[in-house]
Length: 365
Image 1 (cartoon, helix red, strand yellow):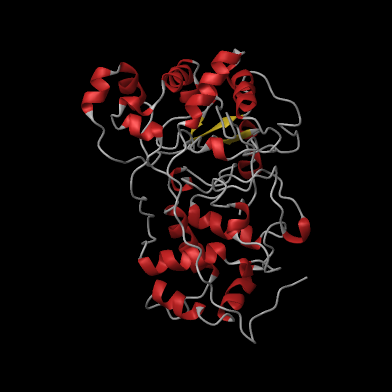
Image 2 (image 1 turned 60 degrees about the vertical axis):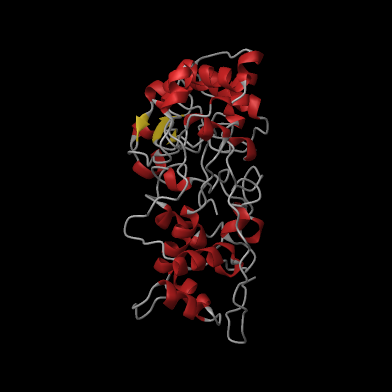
């Protein structure tokens, strides 16, 4: 799940964010096929784009200290889709991160335990492995730390931390799956190992081979003429000062409303973003600049989920972050470029989960 959703400092559902006043968070992971030199030589725009962006690699990156064995990835996939990790046995990670909906849930804010709504729009899980931190306020260092938050959050899945292992131990079939994933551990069924397994599965959810990736790798005709004009505007207007690297975002923090603060429907005064983590006044209304990968699939936009139109989101970000009143033609072209960031969606077969038994803990009302 989203585990504490945050304001999209976003251009199009994510952010064209703050640019000149943004703050780097950490180095972004970037790797992929070696780009063709011939395409860039023939097209200066390609050469310029390669200085700013990187293609998504064909294979997922490794997670430090968390080896992605086949058994662990298989277990993580099972846990990602298992609603019995929630107190009600109704909500799974996939409820808010629907892999058929761009890794999000097409809701302004996600529905959690007892029909409660989360405070922020659910970010996509796709390509989240490339982000410098997780959650819109960056309070989780990586996917492993993020995975545990929604499970125990009383608004989301609402399982007490001590109950997670008890629940899974009571489901015949899971003990053997954990033993295969974590060989040699005397008590492998634990919340910590749940987080590790979900993290390695989520790391596989990358979307390479978008038109933009193919362009970066040397295929000059992968982008249409209009998309190339939009890419040029995206860089010339300053969007790429924050939205860069392999994720076209996700590698830094920035305030929402650098030039002009948006209205309270987009920037509620009670949600101060990263300030709620650091308590530093400098972090008030600062958020992680989200990735724009697959942004055409992840409406509604902004942390409030208040904007459903990609073009409108582009205009909001141009005004609030860049002080630019984009023309309809400019907005259309930037939005056209953003559609080129939609990559090959993960092909995931729904796992057959272990059946509950007579002694399996029952769902809570």
